[in-house]
Length: 238
Image 1 (cartoon, rainbow, N blue to C red):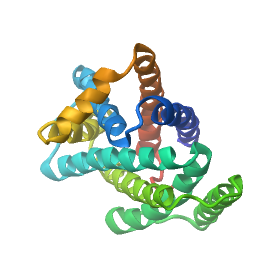
Image 2 (image 1 turned 120 degrees about the vertical axis):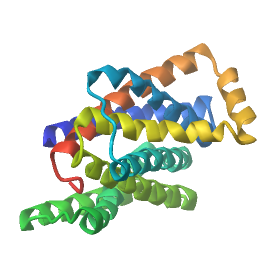
Image 3 (image 1 turned 90 degrees about the vertical axis):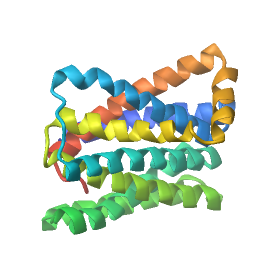
Image 4 (image 1 turned 60 degrees about the vertical axis):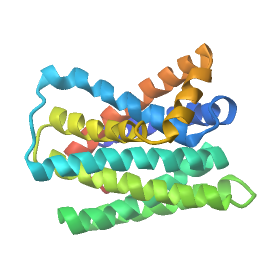
């Protein structure tokens, strides 16, 4: 599962660069970008013929929480990388997500790490902090820092909930229902006054912007697939 996790983070880095470009040069609105990114998760319906099962109520709730949490995390993450550089934000995410996940996994999943895993965990977090602090000489923008921390907390909720789901169902079903929860967020937004503003952003986008967006979301989908597989197999904290 370690190789799957490494592959996921590599693709996530590529996706992060594309997201930063889109937010800085093309889209400009983190909410709109998160809206359309979350909306693409509904394409998971293609998995229905491949072993999707109905879940019991408790597992379904955790699956939906995972998806909703991921969608919320994307908004804060996009807000953070718009206010700062991707190379600064990703290490912060890499440092805070394991900390929040460690706490949540211990409380809700009763997950216990071995001594060596704790040592690896500490080095992982310290390394991320050092990279983030030394990456740039100027101070991190408060909005970027707060958004990054909120994104990390939301990602941790999503990953911990997802691990619970994978403990109680197969991989395809867990992936399907969690992504449906993610797609539920933009559908709710469409019922609010924000609908017109978000639709206009999509209508004004150029063909090249749409092409970059599609490529970015393909990379994100591959990253999510590897990340989910790693979570289903190993420790959600690591």
